[in-house]
Length: 288
Length: 172
Image 1 (tube, one colour):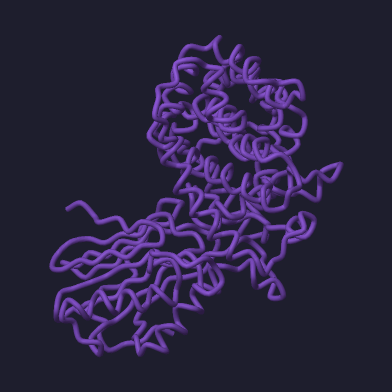
Image 2: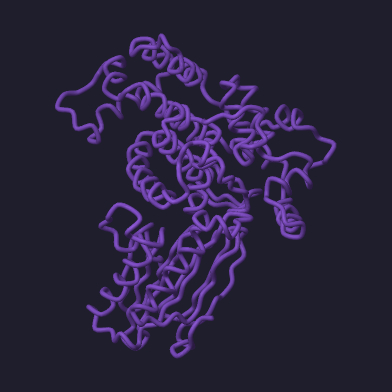
């Protein structure tokens, strides 16, 4: 159970079974963000992880791409799939094992965190594409990782969610506000510490920290607005809901800042669900 | 008995005994239509209020307006009587603190309103509903016992009603 004298740093350092991302995947993330990246340089990073290499080759040869010949070499696979898909696949394959674990403290059953994270990734990517405000693949990655603080915090939460929800209802607060009041910090702060420990790019750390309060971030960041809107779409459509449900604030100004209209929200939601159905089939076969 | 899970945006028909279920409803609505005399039920997992605001879809259950039509069509082809069909709606949650001047964000409330409107136009009788709030829900309709149960995302299960007792009533 959480003792309020435990700091976030101690939660992150004392939690034995923390999630991790293979170093090859972290290098692929960094490489795809580099302006000098190429199919060969990405392939070199991928080749250091055999499991990842196999998944990428399997995806390149899947019926989804309908190729008439077999792809046997990594650089060719990177060309066929594209840098974006390779990066997304690498991160999906790396996070799937720990994101599919149940988090009873948040009332998240098996695969619920995964469903919520993957749906947020797809929605954030779509919002980035529609708004042309930031890189689609970075939006996907940030969306996928936005709630990873829950994994570390859940180990210490025990049954506190009931107290947090009661407090939130009594005081008229969002779930993350109530987490901060009851625990002293929320899952976004724990997630940020974890992201820094993994040496993730700074913008992704910012998204993890402020995805429920984009206006609180020090600088305006389109990536953050994309994930805020993407998270709203995924939560609203019920993907992987836990005990915290929809008890979060939605900042309509995030949509405005991205140049999107509230009146387009239904069309965006519709496009998101259509995209989710397509990508889920494509990625899940390869991630499992 | 294994429940029949209604996928997002779709409608499932059940003749005779069995269980229909809509999982993980946020702002979506699980809409059940049933003719208890004929022993036939159909459930839709509705995502959005109005089919005119999005791309046309083959999935009739995707929008409130097309879902109501789809449920009626499915039930009437199974020799149900329009006047005997009753409806139950569950879901329609909203994000926290949505203001009245930002109705677009409140997809849940708009979904429920659209369901009511479509039912009114089609002469459908809504006899029970559990909608709103900020929590997720899973609704299960046991067509043998008539029990409609709701499990919310915090893990508590409640019985909304037994549709066998509700033939002539209307939801508030």
